[in-house]
Image (cartoon, rainbow, N blue to C red; front, side, top):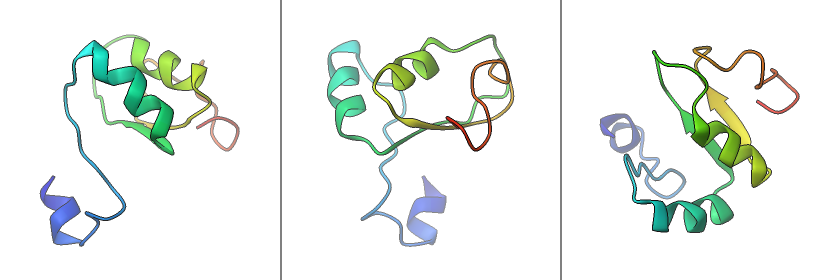
Amino acid sequence: MNYIQTHALQDMVQYKGWIKSEEKQSLLSVCDVYILPSYFGGLPMSILEAMMHGKSIVSTCVGVPEVVIPNYNG
């Protein structure tokens, strides 16, 4: 979040952190890009949910190289 403020990106970027499931569908329907900076774990369900909404994905390589293909859907 400090990066967003330091680089004056508040008008373009929103950091939501953990959200409740009720809010998830609403946010996925209005976002342009889904970002998941995870460094451990398997295939995150949130990546699949973002793909179902047709969103571009930006993520680390943990658990996603088989699903998120650079310059295609991520």
